[in-house]
Image 1: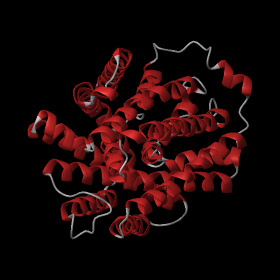
Image 2: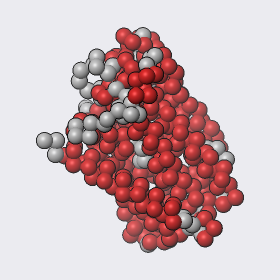
Image 3: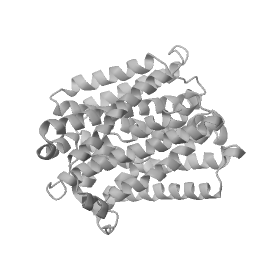
Length: 397
């Protein structure tokens, strides 16, 4: 049963999320570490709803919205996804370009090769093959756990962060806290996991094991985020002035502490794996959503001639993301804008997910009172954070 949850959670720890965690550690030491761990149940609660909906209804997210609330709401939901997916794909291919850059490779080589690999992987077909290769790519993120040990963090300082007073009146701190919250659940994650559950053939009897898959993924992805934060907190906090807002800057800043080779290798493997997996997941999420909204065939086990819309949307997403990155002059600026956009769109996506869970689930799997309350609280949290982050970004004064 393992697969959809691990895939989508590892994709969640993409280039933008890693930069956010690194900046958090460099700027505030271990202060934001408790938040990274506290977000595990929030992430699990949201994504478990997609498992429950997909397994009990046999429908993807966009299809469920279309049949429950009508085509207009489905169009709004898919439109929201496509906006988020476009920005996310730019971020992921920007991560690939950044990795190639500090290894001495031109983006004009690394980005097209990455796009060609992703196109070949999916067109060659087979859900199981795509999932296995995706998980292999995501496993490279575990190198950050090793890097956290190599950074020799002080255990006392780490544990003290859980009792430390948080500087809630500091604007910089609040911005980074909101950024970490906004990076937890991306809009495309909801569409991907529900679509993957359906395409893999998971049904109601599989929910218990699928929940384990989702919980395991939630724990791993937040441990990776925590590890990146620990690396920069242990080595850069108090020693590095300015903002770390690119993979190359992070690697260069860490070189005196981890060594040039270890620094480059860590971030090359971790970011390349995360970016490639996230690009794959985001493109598939968009493909499933558009095909579901149109009522077209949409399985990775279908030949491209049998599901033309699904494969065309996937190819367009990959090619468009790669092209935008090659044409962009400010990849960092694009990545920051994408994070703000995700924070703004997330309440719409999570709100629709909660509405489906409250109205669509069959009786044995319906949310009980505690589940309704907690899902409502999560929706309120992401809404407040999204609007707050946008306000901090748009009105910096």
